[in-house]
Image 1 (cartoon, rainbow, N blue to C red):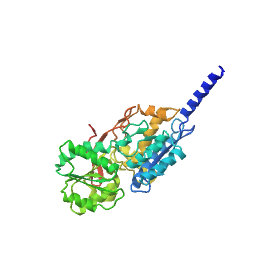
Image 2: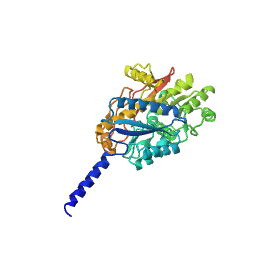
Image 3: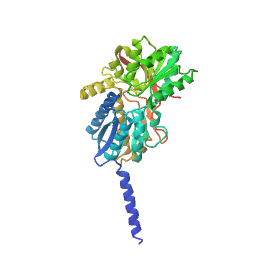
Image 4: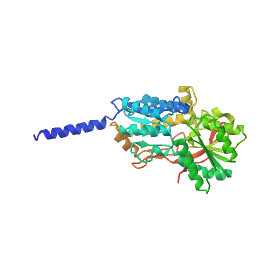
Length: 388
């Protein structure tokens, strides 16, 4: 029997090596990754922009020979911004399409619903497009987040804006879900540091289109600064209704309102809106030649102007590719994690803050800065501030 034992040990070692090398979604010639976007719901514009930004970087990578000789294949599923549909989409991508990794999934509630499906099959949730704290906290080895949280954005920026504007009554309108609540929690934490409380709070259900009652409530409370836990049409609807009724407080939103769609769809009424942001909107006539070149390349390919969400999609794929390249030829979940945990991502052409990761640090950066819509364009008005 003795000669058999070394053979058994060798076979087990070989099997172990094969299972390590053959991670789901990684073959000799291809890496299959997935993303879930809203392509049919209230954030369909964001979803389309993220997808196009991702496609641009995927095409560039494949034209340059892929990642360590493997071509990158991106599969896209639609959630309609519905957590239940996000679960079904995750099940398809993870169990049927057998993706290696989930990249840039859009939405807080959607990510929270889908992550358990992924984690059961050892699939990393990489750089979701939401700034909720749950994207990295509580710690999980399969979570990686890139954006300063809504909580920290509000907590850090609001006190300074209140003081600058001499605001006496700060109020909020917010989406009645985890996204909106995170904005409110951060705002309340920031107010607490300057001895203030929220004077009025009013909410709306996801998908709402009429904000007249909420605006009337804030107007009657004499609010002079309104924190927006809103996204696209709710931001435009709230500000538009306010202007119509002669209610003109300072409006301040999170990075969720930092999109060109606000001023393109909302028009002149949106001028003056403040928002936190972590990366610059890429206008095709931008002063920076690098941003201008990239923006025009995007427009040539897709026949539409890029946005900050296009940049998110592009840079998420770029960061994934850099880590996967660093992981080497034997790409697996474990080798990718090992590479990511020593990653240092420098500032890019879009003005992002530098990001770092470690075995205990799963949020790349907690820095954000202020921008304001002036004459129909977002203009950066502050330096990056880290949360304390």
